[in-house]
Image (cartoon, rainbow, N blue to C red; front, side, top):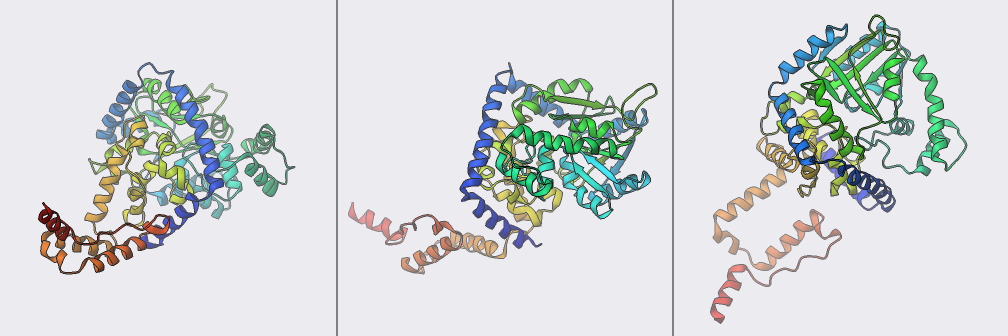
Length: 463
């Protein structure tokens, strides 16, 4: 799909979603509950701004010495019997996972919620390999049943109402129709229980990699990640290289920052630190644990000091929930793993600037995203830098470059603006605004009866 097609598709989908009243009702209802929870959660902080400062500083410090911290993590993790695999891109990560599942004759994989596995399209790959891959997070399970991608970084099924979920269960699972939310949850729980014990492989992501402990920290609200990591013989954690933090004790800062910004909780219900496979004398845990350190374009951002701050992201989803664009067009419109402001910043670098540069223009630059980011990523500034880079690298459309060139020339040659009469200039402006959609839902702009120079002369003469 070309850049033109992706950009055009984005505009068409955005247009449809922005004027879909039912979609807007559901999103505003769900985000409204989030806003209330976060407002209450923030009151638990004595000095939230100081916590943000510390989080930003620690993440920025790590990024300056990312190679050293990753090597420290690898040394400490492998010392306890774990394995670390470095994957430069999605293809390498998938190939390694394929080898691991084949080695243990895996027929079933249980997956906890993981954006990195969405990023590399793991479910699709495993299906081609003949391996059943089951999402165990309730929201992920629902959208998987419905053949959709996650809608939101934290809340995959945010776009669905209780009635929608019931209809999905009736259609795909043959359950009886119900409006009881608890019954819907119990249905999913009952179906997933046997999958945990039957699966040969469990796959999770990782919220944080801990350098000094050589461990992977996972935070969740349902316990499905613990079950996915504990029952199967092999636990694979696919984690982006930017998720590293220096010390185990840093979790007392980052876990509350993540949970309060993400869901309004003081801490999430389940917080687990995985130090490796089951050790001698331990009753629980996998026989083997493998961490796949995923680059997949992250070093593209790391190599750009002015945009490196985007790698501080802890995937709380706060920027999505305050973004006026996201709240109008929804998560699926972006056609990327990461949506909203943070997705618009990082997707062009992870998946290609020519194909995704239009996302950096899908912003009002109001700065609301920057104001709520728990690690102080200057998101609206980074969106501007993305736009600048796309122009400098020649990715702007031919028509846009021609229009800007003509405008620049006319500004440098003032006399050229008076060559054509005002009526022709007014007609040209009307055509231009019509093509960009300005007048589709707005009244046409009132045009001046004469040129600015003529009006200025008339004003001077009347004095």
